[in-house]
Image (tube, rainbow, N blue to C red; front, top):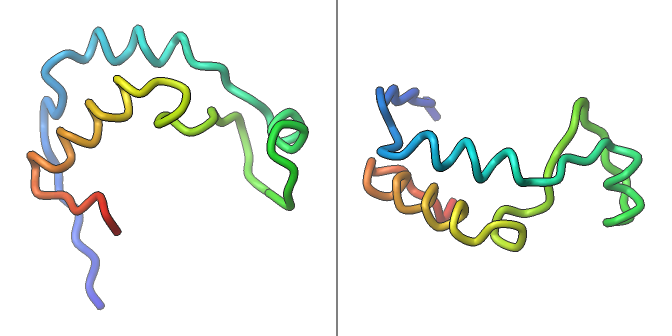
Length: 75
């Protein structure tokens, strides 16, 4: 199976709005996330909860741009 890389310059039309929405998200360490969603996870840095729940606008906006650029979001 070959993997392809697709480069899309200026992917989003409103990068400033996306940036502002991302700054509003809560970022959790592994320890904090394990208290919220118990499990055996192992990853570096910080993460957010699901965009779908945390910021539906951001979630739908990103999905729409992925689909517009021929990226299968259902995989």
